[in-house]
Length: 127
Image: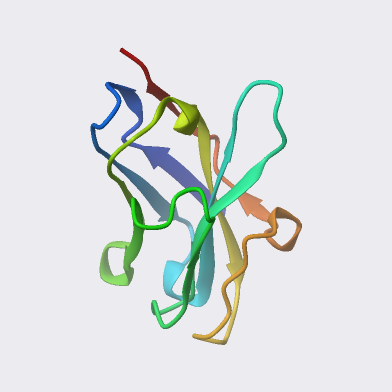
């Protein structure tokens, strides 16, 4: 059993903040690099952020740099995505995904590199 569950989504006004959580069960998250991805209606899936197994490497899409921060707490088997200064174009279903890794330098924003995915959480940014 390898399961990822996203939470923390919801409706927020432009300029607001949300913190998404990705909780793992059935495996030890500290052995996995984690990516956050999003998909809006009519658009392709987009890599938002990623973090290596102990946080030694992170990356962000240009569209969210300076606004989003990824972090992890391996003791809690959880990865977070802090989203600030939210914009309507951030509206999407947000997914976390996991890839087993032995390297604290591995981090990727390509969804094809992640075999394990959660069910997603809806983020809506609207007035």
